[in-house]
Image (cartoon, rainbow, N blue to C red; front, side, top):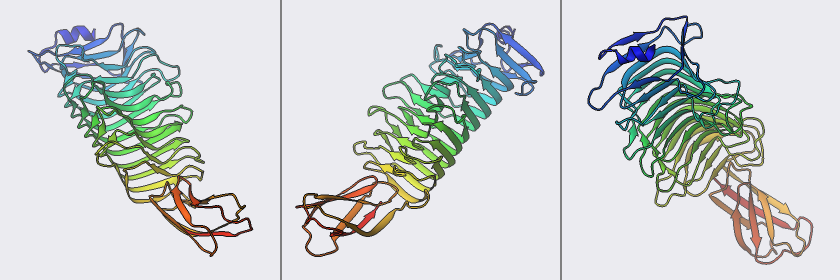
Length: 420
């Protein structure tokens, strides 16, 4: 019925779907444009609640809505339900035009696939090559294998320039392990998904979800802005992950304001090819006791690249053996605090230990938030051998002597200093 109406709709035409009604679809609803003629359509309902306007896939083998060929439209005020194997919205690059839609508006939508069973589809709202369009008040949920909401570029051209105002992307406990709530990436070797703006993103899957990622920036995610987020992740979940390649790095993405927690894993995790990103005015923490995860794990080692910058960040959470911050070579940290008792950015003291006549290496726990960028130690008493090296680690300093101190009790005394 809806496809028939679209086929006969004039330029600028409107389809109004009644409220308190469920429209069952046995084939995908196709919203398509063309290179030569660009109709603009409006498809609207009377609200997105259960008892309002609902479009329900009735065939598990099909997507509910397929958008393609540079379509231009407004889709608003309705609930769109997919099936266990079909996506609720799929924007395809399979048309003549490389972008699936342009100059379009998605407004006040509830987009969902079943949340009480595991789905076999790779996404709930999967948008390939979207361009210069707006999204407002969008809720997306389901149990897919890979991601809940996905923006992807699969061509040799760069796509993006979309604006989101209020996006909630949430996977259920039945989603695939490591399912991303929101994902931006390019599948091309050097093209980018860029210049998208997000105003408040919420990703709060159930705590029983395994390995979810709140905001995932993959290869080619560049020049994107996030203003406010709430990502409270499940077991082994990551709040923000940047994972890219040397040929298509993750570059120049910015996060301003947000709250993120995870369980046992890292809150922010960047790889070797992520650089030039900023994280500002965030509250981050690991729920309970962290033993393996870091609040910030910066892996940037990109050759000749500018560092990632972390500024005005409050860290919360329990105590544990893992450092709060783990940066390999290039991050910049400014104005970071918290993480509970015994975690410092600068620390010093006197360590008293006992020699046994053969031991040459002595360790000193420094209680810093991460591996020191500067450390020093000196003998506090006479008669000790010369110190040959001081090796800073994530949780302790290792002081190496040129020869073993004599055997004795409390006869190795060191003054030490460490700074993150």
